[in-house]
Image (tube, rainbow, N blue to C red; front, top):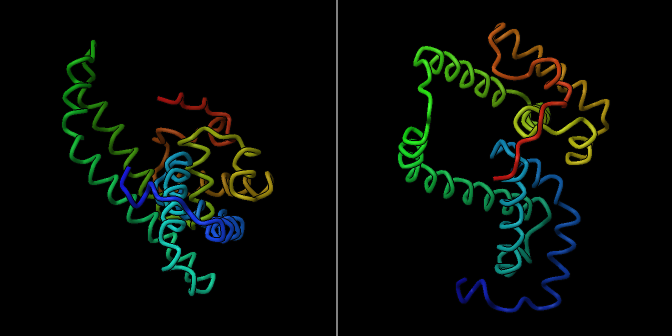
Length: 197
């Protein structure tokens, strides 16, 4: 931890950041979740953004609420880019380790088809409207059910189900029958949840 991160935050700044958190958390979380494609990663970015706000409150104090939200989203975006760069640096090592420990070789043709279908799906999801994209990511990548998604995004479960239905129809139109996910059970939010690693 750096000297800046280790310093004590004054009580008035802590109160101001707490008020900002209450007023802007959902908006910033939605942005970060859509940006990362993962609820947990999005929440991590949001935590880092509010920590940065507490440490650099002098930059935010005179800004209007919209300016503070923009500043928080910029911090999330910058932290995300830093993470992508770091992950890219270790990407080859992870591939080598996975290949070393894989017991049964996969058919290269199957791997290629599955990878292409998955890339097309995520490209289609990224092109969806933000609310629909967030719902799709939370359902199909994180395995959350409609009630959990509704709580996370501040929507009604019925709205979540409608957004999932529309997202599934859009994927079917754009990708066809070869969907690596978003089958009826998963699309209703009943996909098995990923285990934390």
